Image (cartoon, rainbow over all chains, first blue to last red; front, top):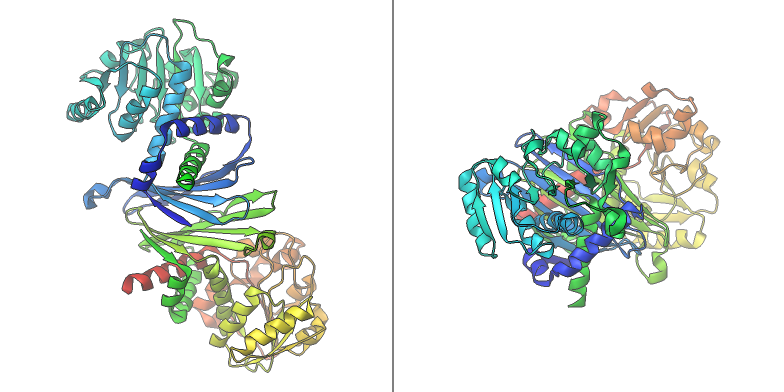
Length: 316
Length: 316
């Protein structure tokens, strides 16, 4: 069994291979050519934290993957990052453990951002003059860098509850060629951007339906558990195109859940990302359409990215 | 994160510490002072195999444990053992992975045998002149060696479907001081032994109720999944004392399940091992009583043994 550290993972990591494998993973997921059981969960009270175990395989793959991800929200008190994690790559031919990827959560952050990039490649309007970010944490950094695979636009407006944090984000992202302007009003960021990415842990809507201009695409990444919400429910209802990573999950605890559970949208309106990645013509956007991609995170992304990393390591 | 190989695990392994910690684990389990979610499962068709993920923690422990165990039944065709596995020890204070125990299934075999020893310590009749083994595979070897912690008896009768395998078992166990006599009839093994351990994967009863003499204890280890059965149902019904590692599991898929699901025994008759380990006087056996301990394997054993190994490694 190979034990691979984060720096070793990063050394062999191929963005193009990861994009392709996660794309294929979403397609397999939407064709139900995967075995992905319900997520395992453990909760902790003192200190508060949780652990998710996501696992499964893509049919006919020689591998299966088990991902362990933890979140302990008081870890800053002991100078540790909030999130940690690892992935196990196992043989689906013999059951043997093949590799431990000690990615410390980096592969999870990366696969989440890759889903965002894949959504934008399929859904973004033709002309993007400005990208808007709501939230400026670690996932926002990943999302923005991966957007380079989807758009050449480098002009960014960012809003977050902390102007200080937004300024830090702007400074850091400048190193990667982005001109990021912190905003003091989310309305300004939203109404002036044609491509918007939301990455906050908010439990109440931040984006007002009225702010969103015709021809805008929104990728909503923050709502990954019950009770979270970044978009006003009426915005999800009014969207011309509503794409989700997983119909089951998004109708249960994504942005889509609020509208779906209130009976304000029909299941038929919702299209899985894997469907449009497999057949891009499944959706046609007019120049005035508003599109939303609701991402809750599915295990097939972990399976795909871990497999790709393992295969890169084997090749070396 | 420490990566610990099987030989490193065996080098620090303390049988006494493991017995004590698994005993405490069973007690905590029966007092519901644990968080042990349902077992995660993946099945594979070609080649046939499966993977179980058992995980959880004992309340107030600084650790939680995730165990991955695989069984691929055609592995002998590629010169690999059928079973493989590993355990992850994680911090329940920060979520950090602390250690990977690459035990290759050895800790699972060991914790299963320790449950057998703990049962015999509590339940065995006073005078054991002969131990009877039904089945002579790897688990039988572990069970017999661990019985040294429960009885001084060294005389053993063994029956298995293959006399050749029984002879091999006898030869190997002689090295550990046991006088093992292979038998060609299970009836002989059963009727002449006061302590019986069954470790077969049988799907139909092997032990006939009429063979079992008054004053006998039976530890049944084989039935760990639906459809498996080693003891005639009427034997479970007639037993004076019926102990199980987990009421939930044993009534679902242990030896107990056949009698329980047919409505032939009441839930009140069934006592959890953790209850009698906590309070040995909860059960009093007469000299003619027949007792059965039905073991299906619970995650708390994995949690306890992994924790103990990790603590031994930290001390070094």
